[in-house]
Amino acid sequence: MQDNQSALLAKPVSATPVLSVENLYVEFPVYKGAVKALNGVSLQVGPGEIVGLVGESGSGKSVCAMMGMQLIPAESYRVKKGRIKLLDKEILALSEKEMRAIRGHDMSMIFQEPMTALNPVMKVGRQIVSVILQHQAISKQQAKEKTLSLLRDMYIADPEQVFNSYPFELSGGMRQRIMIALAFSCEPQLLIADEPTTALDVTVQKQVLLLLKERARKTGTAILLITHDMAVVSQFCERVYVMYAGSVVEEGKTYDVIHQPRHPYTQGLLAGMPENARPGQTLKTITGQVPDLAQLPTGCSFMNRCERRIDICRQRPDALPLKTDALHKVACWVVKQEEEDNAKS
Image 1 (cartoon, rainbow, N blue to C red):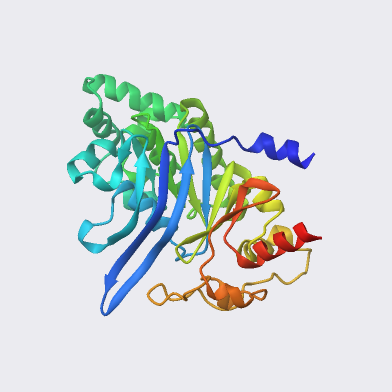
Image 2: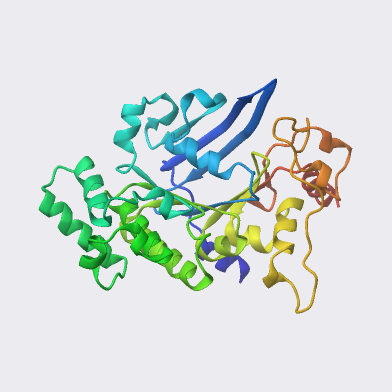
């Protein structure tokens, strides 16, 4: 039963992924050193796939997204190693002019707080129309008609009124629907959603995520959903990457990672979820603190918070596939030791 359900919840990654991040190392120079924000991150998102990227604040999720969109000023970071590909385009090799042609057309992004992403002094309709006209050779009237159609697709009851409204006149949930319409306005092949529902209440959060999923299914758009919420991942993502201190520590089909977590960090995140606790039970927390990214330990970045650490954890682990499931990978020496011990018995 478990295998059948897992198979229904995840599709294999396409031979040609829409987004491919390969062994990416990124650091931000600071006084007498550097913040090592990404440390060998690799991930893929296939056509039509919804993939989760989850972890605590400071784990590197948003840096990964911003690098994909090239929204970080070039002079503020260094790429030590690795590459980012959007289909056949090497993102890191493109100029800002070339990236402007790609943003909105080939790839779009939904930000955590729409009020900071939308122009507060420009009406909603004008903002969407301007994006469409920038990337498509159509008339203003056609762009307006397409915008109204997008707003109707967002289940907005009075699209004409919203079209002529300023962002501050709309609720948080409505503004996020506008952001989804804006993101899909030029039918991108990739959408990066960075904590798109954090500022919303639970009911509106679910409505927005279902709308995002429905629209992606309709258009075949690949989605990288960035969140700290494992419950959101379990409901909306087919595969998931778990990040910690700038590294991917576990990856696999969502059902398998949620129901059979192997890395101690993933287990800690799931143990702290209210829905996994009995009524009246005290929620478990991960002891210690995230390491200073300017002074990372030489071995496993989770070592100092891990109750199961062993001597070899002082060496950096690679993300290795489990013997029972090649798609389920874990960067953990303890798990590797358990796999070897089970193979001998």
